[in-house]
View 1 (cartoon, rainbow, N blue to C red):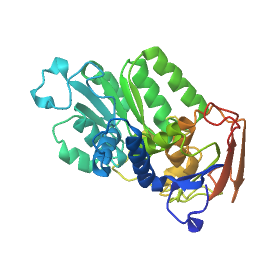
View 2: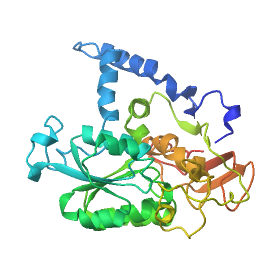
View 3: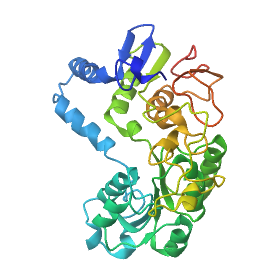
View 4: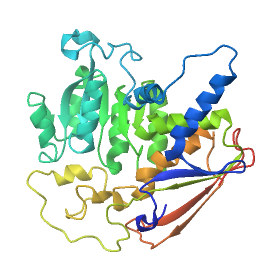
Amino acid sequence: MSDRSQLPEAQTTHLKSRRRGSIGLHDYTSVVESLRSSSSNKEAQPKPRSSRRRFCKAASSVAGCLIVSPEILGRVGRAASPERVPPSDQFRFVQIGAGGRGRTDLTETIAAGGKPVAFCDVDVQRAGKTYELHPNLPRRSDFRKMLDEFDRECDAVVISTPDHIHGVQGLDALRRGKHLFLQKPLARTFDECDRLIRASHHAGVATQMGNQCQSGFAMVAWQTLVNAGLIGTISEVHCWTNRPTWPQGMTDYPPSANPPSTLQWDTWLGPVAKRPFARGYLPYAWRGWRDFGTGALGDMGCQWIAPAWKALKLSLPQRVTADVSDASTISFPASSTVTFEFGASAVCPNGLK
């Protein structure tokens, strides 16, 4: 990942192939159309021509899936309005984190057929617009108390909170046997991720991380290109992003201040050691601090690196090296270039870098 001032585009993925050279995923539309057209011409029996509009429409249906649909969970489908469905058949959920990204996740979960039961947010001002849209739903500030109170009334938990509290909130939901939608990244540390994975296997529920790029048109096209063998033997994949768009590289903590009256700061901290509130943390800058976020790599790696990892059937890297602009024990670097080296896979027989 490089400094955004050096980037020709905000964020994208490129790959290097021994057969085709370099191709950007933002160029996939014409390539996929060529693939579909040539394949159609080779068929003995002609098939209806698949237009770009039709293909985009089909792909958008994938991109629109935010959570596992109610049909898969044995509940009602999207066509039925939650208000007209018997309570025993409704897919009911509680929302942790109602402002910012949480408002989007809430809206899309409702659109997928979900019925919200209650909200939880530690900042009533940031969650204010959501509360205005749903004035009759209960509001809480402590997710533990909300899950206790509405345990029998909800089937799932949607979590849209900062990285540092994903682990404890996700584990609490899974241990209660709730279906779980958890925003990316999965958690802040590898240990938390491992615990969440094991807990999900034990719970036997439907789980989904909020990694929208892996459900979008680009992922469909990318997987199509790889599966068709159009790219050749892939030896390198290059990903970059304009992140961080928040401060990083800090060596000192920001000056303390009194928290706003609308914010429950100690509850926001969650499992992190108690410390004074500072204006250098909220609403987004927490991403740059090691105690709260995962930096630019954690924020966008699961969006731009994971698709390549998935399509190329890679395992854990054999080696990881990083070249950073600055080193700090309390924050992530302002810019960095991270190299992952992988062994051979079914798609990349010579390994990949």
